[in-house]
Length: 168
Image (cartoon, rainbow, N blue to C red; front, side, top):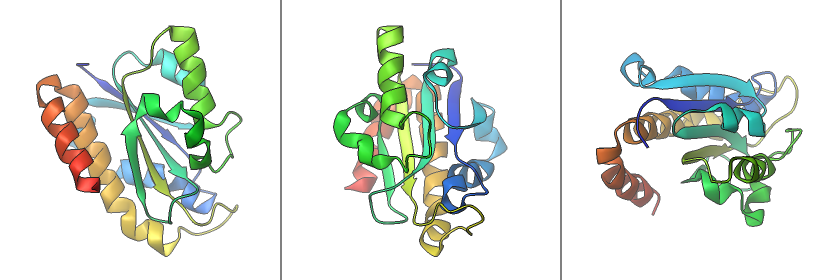
């Protein structure tokens, strides 16, 4: 896992908390974005994952955990059926299904992370909820740290321990 990181940012700013990934990615410093290709994709498809050449970070709003709660997991774990509750289901294909299809088509799991932030209101025209607005800096920091870790494999083991320990 080395080189340029692909960051796939899902969401729609017209749907309240659904646009949180777009807002969080906008706060990433230029020095970090130089290590990544950041794509706003709306909805994740298997093709988005198949087109990525290096490690991948998928960022999206989720539904299920308490609003404002950060979800940080290996991307391959998202393919597990128990994670289907992490999608607000505005996607044509639920996130776990898109990842699972990519694994089937590629023959291996894409390397990377899923970063989600639990939202509260996904209605058209809704404002960003207070709990999400307060948690956006945490998501931005997580994206920034994972870009750095995935772009520099020597730092990955330390970063994984540190980042996963931050959630404990």
